[in-house]
Image 1 (cartoon, rainbow, N blue to C red):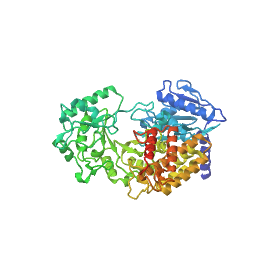
Image 2 (image 1 turned 180 degrees about the vertical axis):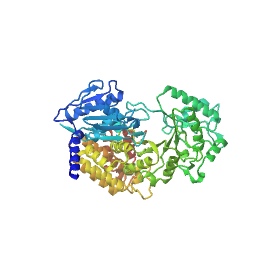
Image 3 (image 1 turned 90 degrees about the vertical axis):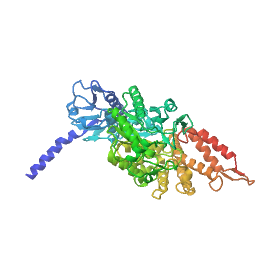
Amino acid sequence: MKKLLLLIVAGMQYFVSPAQKIDLVKNGQSAYSIVMPAKPTTMELKAAKVLQDYLRRMTGKELPLRPDDQAQQEQEILIGNVQRAAMQQLPLNELPEDGLWIKTSGKKLLIAGGARKGVLYGVYTFLEKYLGCRKYASDLTVVPKRTSIVLNAINDKQLPAFTYREVFYNDAYNQEYMDWHKLHSFEGRGADKSQWGYWVHTFASLLDIKEYGTKHPEYFAFYDGQRHAGTISNWDGNGTQPEAQLCLSNPDVLEIVCKNLKLAMDKKPGALYWSVSQNDNVNYCRCAACAALDSSYAAFRPEDKMYSTHGGEKYPALGMGSLLHFVNQVADRFPDKIISTLAYQYTRVPPKGIVPRKNVNIMLCSIESSRNDPMETGDTSFSSDLKGWGRITNNILIWDYTISFNNLLAPFPNLRVLQPNIQFLHRNHVSALFEQGNIQQGGEFAQLRAYLMARMLWNPEISVAKEMDEFLAAYYGPAAPEVKSYITLLHDNNQSGKGVKMSIFGSPVDGKDSYLSQPLIKQYNDIFDRAEAKVKNDETLFARVRSARLPVYYAMLEIAKEEKTGPRGAFVKGAKNEWIPNPSIEAALYEFYYHCMRTNVSRIAEWDTTPTEYFEQYRAFLAAAPQ
């Protein structure tokens, strides 16, 4: 009996195994066609064409496209909701709008997905996971050449970790990059339509201070004994903004906000998310009615939750009571929309005794967190607030910050905290994630950062070490080991775990005694000398390596400017004992400026200082030698 059972099992394996393997292409030839619905959606057609194109690029064989109302064949690739029994048997209703399903059935390959872009995401996932294609950057796509493609059995259903995934990097808004890595854009970058009608800081748009400020000061925040219905200059010097918030207990304010919100919705009927959120300041209303709401819903004493932004004056962060009370009323007026509001600065702490409506999204911002330690352990105040919000809602969008905003080209060793942070957010009911990076052209490791974050937003559990090694090898070629050595050395010295905060508004000067010490700067330059020597005959790779080196030059320049004289200073003694520009700093300046121009770096800081402006300002500084 035992022998008979073994024979039966062996026989089953014999007959099943051939069905589990698909010869998609064999020796440059294929019997397969790509089948899509007779009336395909835009995404189904695009998915079919993308697959056809990449298979041709890989094998030289272009598979024909066929509608599903033609006669069925044994060997087919089914794309989208085609009328074939194998596809109709898949429970596609289990997929959210961006979910995907890749499956083999007999000699058929099925690729399907959710209603938005799932089928297109399925095709790119198939190309990457099963055929070895990669999209490392907008200008770097890897397509391996093959004469044959053989597939084993596949049953791969993937659901996104976050329903909304945005990586705010210039390079990430290339349309194919966005589709490949399954990214969104609140501004509608690329060819995508934004799901957002309003994004953030919308009080000023919903109740215009120019229209109501003079006639109705009672609509605006009360503090320091008076209403504040004035304006101040924007932080970038362009235009003005309200000096304070709205008075959220005033019933007229609610009516005006809802009226203007309805007008905006009528102009963008397809938008789902609408932000009703505070202006970008901490000047909130302390009138008796607003203060009573904040007090009644406060989960802490004010002195227990005193926060500050950018090291400025501290304020109690218990203003969510009046805000959520107001936003819930707005959400009740628009039950088919999601009303988003900020838990930011003075409204960051979750309240008690009131919860967000189901169609209210809480956008929680981590602007105060340190960037060299994971936020769960390095910023226990923020992590406590997040956990508190996670106990009362699962509709949370995190606005996270990943770069040095005042110094976009400074070394910023925070790569090791990206995955722990994303995993922590995922565990605590965060449903959407906006990773604010560098929207300017250029920046420190911009392509690497965008790639790693895009991968983690889909699957927080990936092997970051493996992903980074693959990226470095493809992007820097023979110089990859040196670039990795630099990254490792930089991060080994970033003061993690030592109680030293690395701020998103910091400067290279802050690290001059740690990860940017003089001995380490020398080691970094030695590493890059070796890296550049390895790729000196390949202009593309050399330019990428030099771009990776720019932050070292920038750190040298900023530290030299701060110290002025001494071993690391911008000035040295000349032959006549006079102060002259340090030749090594001048050389670094020239290399820095030229390569910025060569590679179209647009800004040195988030919204200001072009490379030319920086160069001219630094030259003026060098011309004014110490007396």
